[in-house]
Length: 248
Image (cartoon, rainbow, N blue to C red):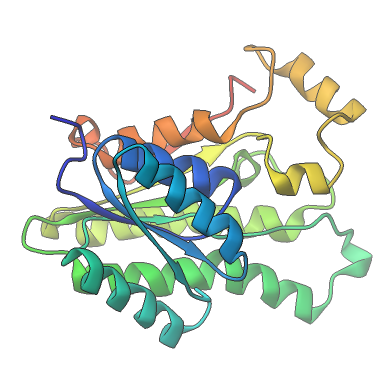
């Protein structure tokens, strides 16, 4: 029997990159999965097709996770398709390099709405949907929560907030058999890191030189760790920040 057989999972922001890696691994372990996307339907459908072609169960649902009404729609579609919810992975997020002189109110609220508010609203809804057997929330953090880089003050602040929320919710929800953990990747080869010019740059080479395992991560690397946290193998783990950085 697969580790996540008969489980149902939502992964926010999972049409590509780390989210796609996570949702594919949850499905491979037997979970029925919801691929959430904000605008990229084509990529979301490709992820669903890939999962279904391998015998898995998946649907794609469009939702803006910074809006309560949209989150309500996401969870309602999940219930309609699969009848329950066991796992929520709060993966949706973004961040840009911006020096302090260029930070605006709009940039501040964009970071915190997308990275923090969305997580809070989705987690609140998940608690309503989890049954008597409890549930599992995995929040995507970053090594930047502990080791911020220059020009990433807003992004790093949101990830530190995520870790604090994780620890608080783990204590708040433990009695209801709901586990809450943060998964904190290091640099990963994703469409966004490529668009930012990191892949193939001197910065990538320097980063790999500082990484004990000698390379940057892949969505597949992070997906495997998420599948572990979602499974009963991690049943005694809650309120933790698990770093997946290749030792960086």
